[in-house]
Image (cartoon, rainbow, N blue to C red; front, side, top):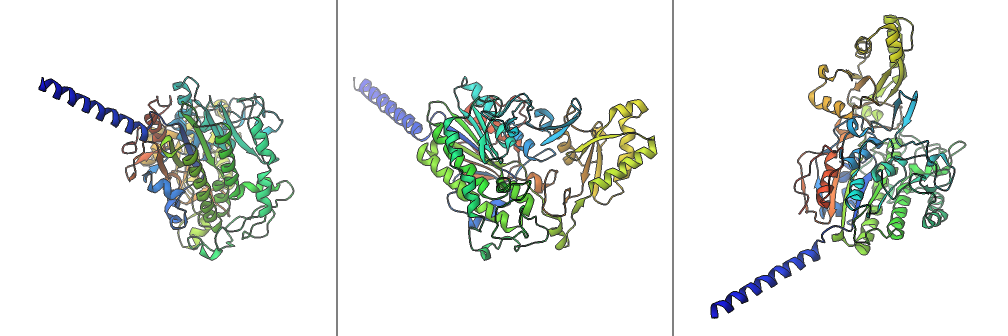
Length: 548
């Protein structure tokens, strides 16, 4: 009898312990997060996490780094490293060879012109007539992690994408999103297309009526801190920096005025306040759409575009870029604070990354006696065309040039009975005479390329036979196609491929890793968190050590 009582008591105690543990576990980690927030910082190179670290607040980038998981060795593994391709790769777990987004634009042989990555002539601006609204994700060939969440929840999840750039909002949100919103500099409104809805919601119209961009413009752009504290950057008024449209010098304080043909709302993009109004709109979206308030996981994607506009104009060593990141840090802190208060840290999964990095301005590197320069594309292409005519006679041999690729005129080649290989040999011989060219690649014969294995993998991952060109140009490090002032991105070198990857919140370990991760690993990792299927074009792997 005593034995039976003892066993019964023991079983009761164990049952209570198990019940308590389950309740405790649920209190800390719900079965699913209420909300996922995917943040992309356009053009954020990895070192910016540390370059300005001592000036960041405790609640922005530092909070993500110190209270989350930092993948320190995270890279892109394809070329070209540009905005559209980057946003697609983050949210599809794929590469341009599969997802089809091989650049911000490409030459479309079927229609005989350049195709913009998210253009869609079959849709219109919702509730308006602006051409900026004729956009959708139809050019994206695969599903996104946001699409997969919609599928897994029988369309119950709410998915919304936000960015100043249309491609930064549309591609992350995927095909089945409830909405994607982007900035129209015609009047400073947030707009969407009839792909998503017939009319913009009342709350969006009310937000636009606040005219926040105009208010930020009126304040002008002054440094957040005293300008002499920006010791991580070169001095103001550098000859290799661009001026804001309407200004005489690239110096603080900046007056956001524009001039004929370029109004102040377009110049507004090239200031940190473009990020701030994105933050404002993101918070309004969370509140008005009640995201994270239902029993189903919701997904908000936010891309901060002004870091890219500022970086292109002033370069990564400028006071303007530093000030933009210090202000963005405060914007991110405000978003995290809102999530803590209104959804709860343990109910939200957040990740932050970038769509590509950025090269130093060549003239700046030259001032330090380092090899760098700007490739004179028009001169080089003219020489290629001249040599092709010498070799094969008169003819239009090159249809277009984009993404460091030449699109050959196959009709001309067919009529003259010339092969791509024959044209390639002339092009390669011509361009390799230049000191700024590292190699020339025949995209139809990658197996015989002289590129190192590391780089040839980038080319293969970026090559889509229906959208890519025929011949690809590879420049030396720190050389690019561009202008004498400002800078750009798009190649396979580490300054363009090495970007941040931070996870924070629901079931995220606190720590860091230096193991190599690829940008295509993000969506499979999020899928693993959510216990859903990866996007259908995914090639990435679940990152180990991130999830508790």
